[in-house]
Length: 296
Image 1 (cartoon, helix red, strand yellow):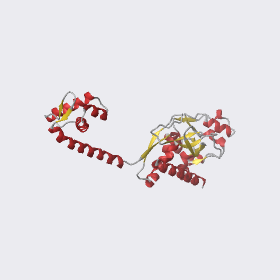
Image 2 (cartoon, rainbow, N blue to C red):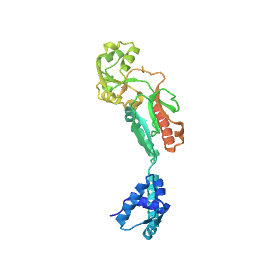
Image 3 (cartoon, one colour):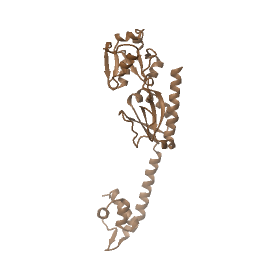
Image 4 (cartoon, rainbow, N blue to C red):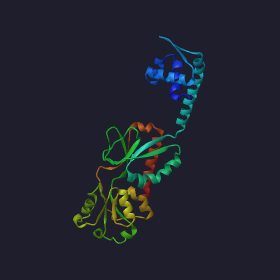
């Protein structure tokens, strides 16, 4: 039977350090565990590797012959593991809401990967209201007020909400009051959005009773694309659809959340990390390009 890697490592450390106590300290286990592992290896090899005395531990001829072989084997193993570790592409984790990820970032990520093929961007879903930045996250992209204590926040997009509809639906709407003949597509976590927009338009929200509610904005957008009604959405979510003519913006009135915007949030020291610095520079440039396209 071939001895276990753990057992051979215990033997190698004891032979190199000349003590079960020193081997135990190096491997962060007990002296008893080292002694047990060494005895197990000796039983599997069928010969003693150490002469044990009351206050000394002396390698046998078999132990002395095995010592350089084990030391070389573990040195080669460490080098192989280090080679694989260094060959693993650098990456970063970015926490982001599902709708922003699906409707804006993911369709553009291939552009970043083309420019930086050696950097892996891992997207983590973040839907809680409190803005947090876990230690294993390089950054988060969230709708928030800035700044946040101890963190940097760079503005990406406005927090405005605009009404959109499929072209065939939009063609039937000439005035804001025409919305009463259509279904308003709501998002459950923002139940006051449509009432606010209607009120600011001078309309009575109580008269608009045709509603369809969804858990996420991406569902409401899909419903609008399918002609089920009018959605009130963030412009970045639908910019590609507006550019392609799949959706049409209705009216100029936008519902604005004062003091809030989409931000890239990160720790100041993250700027010294090359993968994050590359992602940040690309993201800010892509946001600027997206806004320029929308303005044009």
